[in-house]
Each structure stands twice: as C-alpha cells, then as structure tokens.
Image (cartoon, one colour):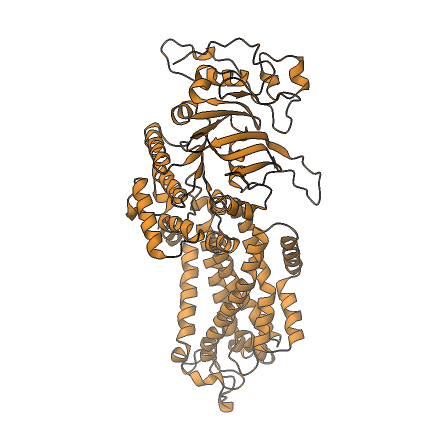
Length: 332
Length: 279
C-alpha cells in the first residue's frame, strides 16, 4: 500500500512576470515555492490552505498544463518534468484533473454527451461502439441518465455538472486524479452525495487522489493524509487523524482553531485572529509564516525552515516545533 | 429561444431582416420577376430615355433598356458579389485571427501588425488602388474587395480568441490533451461566432456599397452588365433630364445597404454578451 506512485521534489512554479515590449517587467510570483510530496498508491492526499496559497497551481503543475520552473516530478519512478506543455501532458497521461468550476469547464456550445465523447476521441478511442460502451458504463457509475447527454451545460444542476466532469476524466482510466475543490459551490446535501460518490469511485477504480480543498471538515472526512500549504510551501504533512488531533506547526494550529464549529456555548470570537496572509509578491524572509506566527523568534526571520520528519509519518517545516507546547485543540 | 423573441421585438432589426429577405428573394427569382429579362444585354435604340410609364415603371436608359428590369437583375449581381467577397474575407481573416489569438510569440505579432496596417488605410482606397493595379473587371474588383476586407475579421476573431483562450473549458481541454486545431476550430470558433456573424452582416452592406463605387468608377462591372454602380455612372451624361436613370439604381443600393445595416445592428444587440447572459 505504501509504494509511491507520484513523487514530487522541490517543485517550484513561477506565475506571471511576462516580459512586455513596453513598460516595466513585473516580477513573477512564486506560486509554488519548493514543494516536495510523495503520493502513495491508492491514497487520498488532501492539500489544504487559504485562498491563494498555491493549492490550485500545485495541482495544475502536477497535471502539466502549468510548466514548473524547478524541481522534478516522477511518475512510477520515471521523470516526467522539464518537458514543454504538450509533451508533459502526454507523459502524464495517467494523471487527470477535475476543475473546481464544473460549469465553466464544459464548452457551453457542446452538448454534455459530445463533450464526454470528445475526451475519448482525443485520447485515441476511435471506435464509436467502444466509446459508447465506455461512456455508458461511466455515466451509470457516476449516477447519470444516458439521456442527459443531449442536454447542454446550462441546463444541468451543479451536482449533475460535477458528475459530468468527473465522468469525463474517469472514463480515460487515469491512475491519479487531482480533484480541485470538488464541493465548491454545492449546497450541503449535494456536497454529501458528491463526496460519497467520489469516495466510492476512487475505491472501486483503485485510484490515487490529490484532493485540493480549503474545507477542513471535508478533508478530515475524505483524506488519508493531509498536507497544509502556506504561501506555496508545505508546512506540515501528516496522517489525517494525527494532524487534526495533534497539529504541530503553528499555522496548522491556528487554521484548525479558526475553523468555525457550531458547538453550543462556544464563543465564535475565541478563534485567534489571523488577519490576511502576506502578498505572494512580498513573501517574508526566513519562515514565510513568521509575520503571523505567535511563536516567531529571531531565527525565523533569517533562516527558512526545512521540511523535517517529526515523529511517525509526519513532516513539519518549523524551527520551533519541538519547543512549542502542544496546543489545546478542542476536539469535536 | 429567448434570443429570437428578443430579436422579434427589435423593430429596426426586423425591418432590416424583411428588406434583406426581400432582396434575396428578388435576386433568386430575378429572371422571372423582371418584366424584360433580356434587357440585361439587349438594346432598343428606338425606346431611349423614356420617362417612367405603365410599360416601364422606372423608365428606360440610354440604350432603351427597361430600368426596372435592370435594377431587379442587378440585385443578383450585388448580392452574389457581397456574398463571395465576405465569404472570401472570412476564409482568410478568421483562421488568421484564430491562430494569432491562440498562439503566443512572434507569429501573432506579425499577423496583427499586418492587420493593423490594412486597417489604418480606408478599405475603399486600398481596394481602389488594388483594383486599378489588377485591371478593371468584376473578378478583379471582387478580389480587391476580398483582399482588403479580411483584416476586419482577423481583428474581431483575434480579440474573441484571446478572451476564450483563457477560459476554464479551454484549459480543461488542454488538460485532456486536446490538439490546437481541435480547440481552435471546434471550440473557440463556435464560441466566437456571434460577433463574426454580426460583422459579416454589416460587411455585406458595406461590400455592396464598395462594389457599386468600384463599378461607378469603372473598375468593377463592365457594360453591359446590369450593375447598380455602373448604371449610375452611365446615367451621368443624361442628368438631370433623365432623373429616373440614376435614381432607381441609387435607391436600390440605398435600400439594400440600409437593410443589411439594420439587420447587423439588430443582431449585435441580440448577441451582446451582457444580454446573452440571461439565456
């Protein structure tokens, strides 16, 4: 179970910084700033962080539609990084991505059925009968009526669209799926059914999944392990239970404590005030989190902490994780 | 089909549609509708320059030909010239705009700077120069108009492609490993269609006018073709006495161009992205 299928090492992605003919060149933003993680076969690895922390860019870079500027990506031990976009996509055929906004991810002029069939056509399934058979099976698997194929994206509900985009990717028989905020924009009851479906499908098809989300409760429910991201870096990675019950990194602690919990009598204002994260164009020196950290000392401003092992299966990137007393995180 | 209902409520757009449809019907049935279909080429020296009468409601011209018949026969010429020119310009302009909008780097720069040079000079002046260079004939006039009209399509398609290029569904397609040709022609082009259709409609009217100007200046249709611009040119020596000779072909040009412009404006209102949202 624990063999690594996808290995990311020191991954860095620069965004923007395009050179223009006239006008000053804007400096690029390091949206992903040296991320290392290993995806184990069959697991669901959650990636959590505030908006703008580089979660989506990380997913897009691993998929290959965003080119990495440094670092290596290995798929089954084979290096698939350092390639121009189209070749990168071909090499990473086993990796597929489901977009956050399902309605926008489908061509509004194409019927859903044609969009689905197109995915197979592009990937060389030339025989019509085979395409229809595979699509039929997949539509049934995601719980959609085959008749739905004649409809257009604007005629479908959010949950149906989510199933369609999921089917479009899964029908290609990938081995790794990157799910970007699979529950965003859905109401709670639909969220629950979509999550149940995702779980079932991932298990049934023996898929490995990178699960990008900012919703802590969803991640806790879905993922085997969780990586916490802050300004393009992974600050803590641990098994889900471990991370939620005994967070080590100061950022993880505040993040968990800031999650609103509806417990009778609990004061909602008790959560520590985090303020806004610094702009990714002006990342603090040393530890990126030090400007908002309660435990920051001098060394945090001068040296960037490395991601180091901190007990069974856990890695943390903090100078002081040993010294900070275990915080009382209210368990729910 | 909210779009259709919205268009039906637009009076001027509907007027334009009626005019254009009438022109098309007249063009298709021209030889049957014209009272003297043979007057396209025959001349009747004994009936020269007769004022409008029951026999020939629009009068006769300097060669005794029925002006009404020649106006009707001219509709076919005007519409087919416009259709061919606009289709040719689209055939050149649309792929160039797609390619320039889709790719990055020096190639789009080259395409768009050439387009800008063409757009910097009034199309009619450029077409005149080109037609003069190629020698006066209807074919050359159409060629000149085509070769000067494509930049209008390139400009629009370029802007639309740049906009659609960054949309999520295009990114999703790239994630699925779709090829550039598929993304450009099967996905971006249909999404860019409404403004292209509007431009083509207005371009039809514009081209009819330009073709008439070329005909008038002797760089388009050649006698004895029943072409409106040419007819006005031929009528100049007989003005103002034979007013009907110039007036009716002129009215025909005005009406058809007016119709295409109204229709184009109506379509533009319908496909305006802010209105399209409500679909």
